[in-house]
Each structure stands twice: as C-alpha cells, then as structure tokens.
Image 1: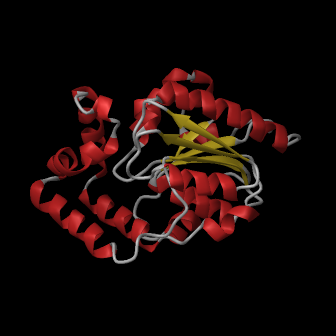
Image 2: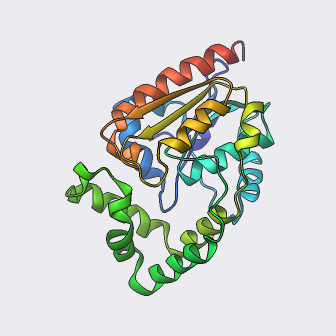
Length: 253
C-alpha cells in the first residue's frame, strides 16, 4: 500500500484524494473501495483527525498538513469535517464528496444522549456496544446476518478505541449548520447515500444536493449507512466519475 506522503505528492493533473473516515472507523473503511478500483489508490490519502474535539479544530489540523489543493471524500462524521474544509478553504478544496452524511447541526438536546452512549460503551465494552446498539442501524436489512461484515466493523471500532469515540462524539455535538454555506461551495460535488440508511436518510441528501451548485447525487439501492463497506464497487465507480469532473475543472493544475 502506498504511503499517504507518496499519494499527497500527486501529479499536477490529478489532485490528491483525501479520505476522511466516520465515527469508529479507520483506514480499513476504504480498502474495499480501493481494491475495487486500484487506480484510485494511486491518488488516495487516508487521513485522520484523531484527537480533535470540534469540527473547526479537525479542519484546522488537517489544513496544516494537506496539499495546497486537493479533493476530499468524507464518510458520515468525516463528511461533516469535509464540509468544514470546503467552507474554511474553498480555494484549496477542488472537489467535495459526501457519503452517508448530512449538513445539519446536531438535534437540539441530543448531546446528553450522545455522551450517555460513550458511557455505555465504556461500561459494556466498545465491541459489545457496536454489536448490540449500533449494528442494526449501520447496514441494510439484507446485511443484518452478514457476520463477516459485522466483525469487520467491530474490529475497526475496537482499533479506534473509546477515547477516540469520546472525541468524535464531541465533534458530532458541536458541528455547525452547514446548510447556509452550501451555495458558496462551487467545486464539483458528489453525494452518495444508501437507500436503507436510517442514520442519514434521503431528506438529508436531498437538501445537500439542492444546496450545492455543482452536485450529483447517487443512491446505492442495496446499502444502508455503511456504503463504503456495503457497496464498495458501486461507490468506487461514482468516485471515479466525480474525480473526472474534478480533474477537468482543475486543469491546468
């Protein structure tokens, strides 16, 4: 696997593709997509916003180490960070891809529930918490008996750990309302959602698609929330088509 540094030094005609994971996810989230379309791997740079506790802090930290210009793809919580990057540095973000995410602020009064979830995970163990409380929300009904996929997601969560879960929870709580910002984001954009996503359903995707000036919205009919793992090949095709739009808009680099 090529290193992030190698991939960040992408050729002028092909801006680096920055990949931002969601809650309780690590770089393994992207492996099935990159395996489906190996050419994506050559320009992909999976990045972490580990340790940051607000969206602004996460974006600021990333901007210190990202290239002068890049395309960004964020999944779920990573999509919130991607939106903040596009707002904070629109001259640097050449393309914006949002997978199973939304542009809304957190629901009023939800902070207590989110923090209680972190406490419950500490008490029961993170793997047990994901299996017992989150799994049924993560995937389409047809995948609920997919033990291999469940084990893959649980293993990611356990690698990420409880302290990171706590920090990611604070990012989710304190995020901005990005909906008023969408019209100013004029870079080629991609929205990908799962037909069976109960965490970020279609109304969230619809308002982002309507708000962004240059967007395409793709729906994965067989997927729930975890599109990169439930429909990696389908996602890869959409990402390649989006990157072609990004490259065309960016040339000459």
